[in-house]
Image 1: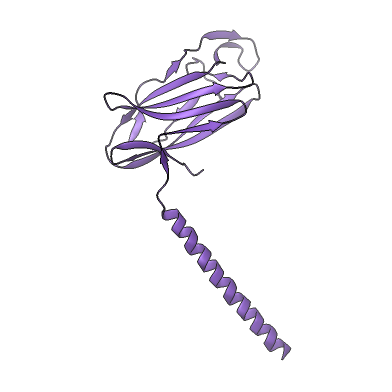
Image 2: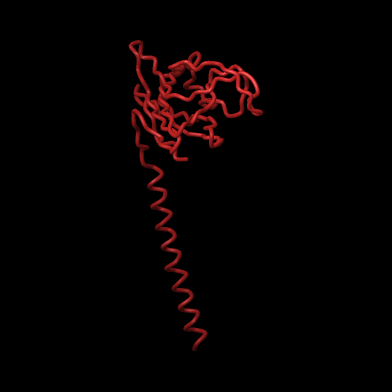
Length: 184
């Protein structure tokens, strides 16, 4: 009798457990189908910097990716205009997408100045950025159909010496370009 009762309780608990799991799976699948939230600009806050991302449309309808970088706590980083190859130099990419690409060189305002740094890791000329700076990267829309591209911004923030990677995603839907949450 005890074996029969124990078997019945075990069978019922497995049945209830399985139905709960199926319900959870269905709910997760429903969430994935939802349309991603889009926005014209977004901000990333850190104790040593603040990044403001924006997509700017010019008069000729060529979009420009604008990144305004505010520095805090005497932070600094290597400019994308530095002539030498540094691992942590300010860098942006859009991966290997065929819909959207960078159009020309990045514009830095104010322009960083090349200076000599005797530090063992630089030991030569480098463009340090230690003031609030705005970067504008013109974009080239290759195909005018709906798409999503994923990009990243990478740089080493000094003096804490950490490599920062900031993901972003750009959506082009019905002729409108906006940011969406990259979900990573």
